[in-house]
Image (cartoon, rainbow, N blue to C red; front, side, top):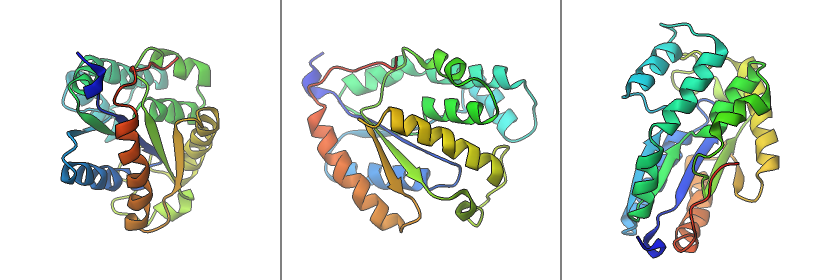
Length: 211
């Protein structure tokens, strides 16, 4: 299939309640309004068997060793990889709420080795752009339903942010760090400006992989 039709692979990353879901929705709506084929995705994808186990863990109804849940998060991404590749090559831009980087950041924040955490992600498709939404962890506690899921603790989210910062510095050529404490509208305007240009720029580029 001709790469002239390839869609862009766009990921939103950041701590819990930072505004990723809102920004994903706004970007999907914008691209649709411009007749750009677009599909939303979210990881973990909780409908599969693996995803259901992850959901039980995140909602505190199931306990698993840190290494096991890390590998399950990674497996959840791998089980959807063929679908992601197919959708992109069919010309659909994918707007994805969380991806490999969340898996690494959250597990490393728990004390697992960074390189060990990253190893099972190698070979997955590499995003064309990652929008990293950043705000002080203390600013997030007043956002809706904060604390409902396992990882929504201020001190832990601060550690997660430090790992995200580390990844952002390492992957600066396709990561875009944005201030999530500004209004949703202003943040969306910055995202949109980058994303629309990206969709046209990557249409004829080969898909790349994480390494």
